[in-house]
Length: 234
Image (cartoon, rainbow, N blue to C red):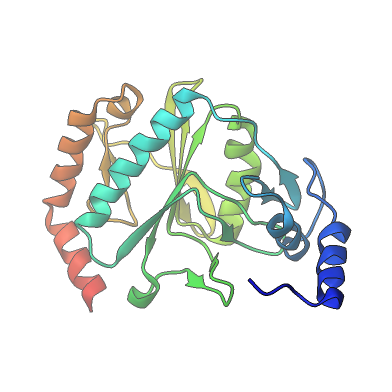
């Protein structure tokens, strides 16, 4: 490999060493945060929420297990719903003071009229239609600061699985404000944004994969889901 000219080596070294590292609690705008985040060592995880830097602690097995369950549920839906896409722990540029890295999110693909776009650097910008967070050590943030950022940015539905409380919260945006979505009389959540995306919250909390899949399949078999897929195709 050809070595860089000495002048370029010096310039690169100065750039790397002059960039301040991110610190938990820093107050930054999104542009500054993003520049510093990209300069951090590989494996660093940080989020900008409401203009404040949050660097989460290592994740416990209960978080990782639930995260995996949510991703499996979402991707089963995506596989049956052309025109949608999903992401696992992927950075979003939401606004001037917000660059989170949600556990999971589901979107309508940009070419099908979704809210998100890829920017010139290859990052997603805009509000996902649906975000899901597993809340354990981050519960206070997920149910307050993050929820506020997501509401402000225009996220249409937000799911927070509160493991300590053993409760699933599902919020839907109405007139620009989050309202808590209640399950039906049968205990099933039904998405208002993604027809057919049904969830049994009790089955999720007990990791009953058979029941989660059964309820989702019922949603995917509805005329509303078929009409949604047809609409996205157009």
